[in-house]
Image 1 (cartoon, each protein chain N blue to C red):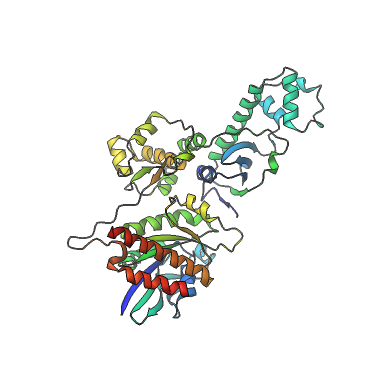
Image 2: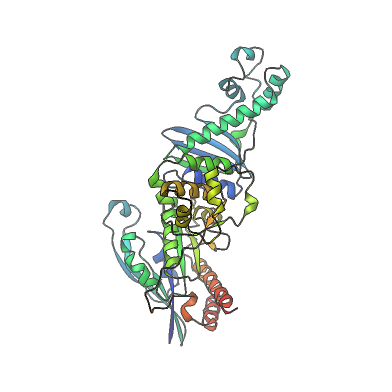
Length: 268
Length: 180
């Protein structure tokens, strides 16, 4: 099934949230005037990311990270050493880098690509369930929750926040799927908000209790929502005018009427 | 003769009129007008400005009315009127147009404020190549696992029937729960 769209309508934070919660495996490609980003995921974890013509090759990543000097590569036939795992092993054996250098450099490169992607307001994206891009590269699994939280913290467009959370008079509750949460790192402000989430308090009530402004509370709630830590509850019903009874489920319709409808549609 | 109603709502061009047309026993009473803005005309020629109206006679004592709401915000004064006394509602979403998902979520919240009645989400146009999976749509619309997000092709009678049946099951469940 296709997963296509434009970042204008469904931004990077929301995309990562979807991939994280649906535990997706595949490659996300985003094309925009800023360039082309390719990100690979396995079971909802980021495992690889590359931008534009940089194909995420290990030598390029290590040189950019300052862990390897180009002259150290003179003894290696890079046209034959296409597989980064083999090359990485040879570099470790030669004593040029450690395994930790490789992992840290790859992680930093992935984060750099994702954080750049957060600043893209437009771009056509598509998600395909294959990992072809990953051929000959080293996958490094990274949990998405903290990346998503960071993305929400970086969201500066107030209008966008208002579009995503137009109504503050909605209660928030803790997630119904806590199994999806792993090692989330929250700021003190985010913890203060979480401590007020109980399924009854509305976003507005939390904002007032914690003396926050609208932008602050919108950004934090948006981040917690996208990271899958909290969920929005049902909006409170509009208050009926005095003397008018609140409209409840079914508006007084009996069970037998609904059963009659069900029988009709079953036979249809 | 008792009359009950179900409301079909959702963003502009999500397939509400077609949904009702597919299952109604009468020619749908539609209040469509030619679209005047260029952006909307790029999606379709005509749109519903007040409501669509379909009818299904269940038996000599019971009739079900299906009301379709106008999709554009500028006609939202009609929504509350149409929501009055409904059994439940169906939120139609065009699964191929992520640019409408945020609006679908806002419409859903608005209707939940009008009445605490059961609802289902119909992930329409599932026969098209670019359709998002209903479970992806659930996450995009921030719906929890209890909300039914159903695959739908509004031109197919069987598909429409399944969506209506699932809503009726939810209504029955709600009635049973409110008795306990």
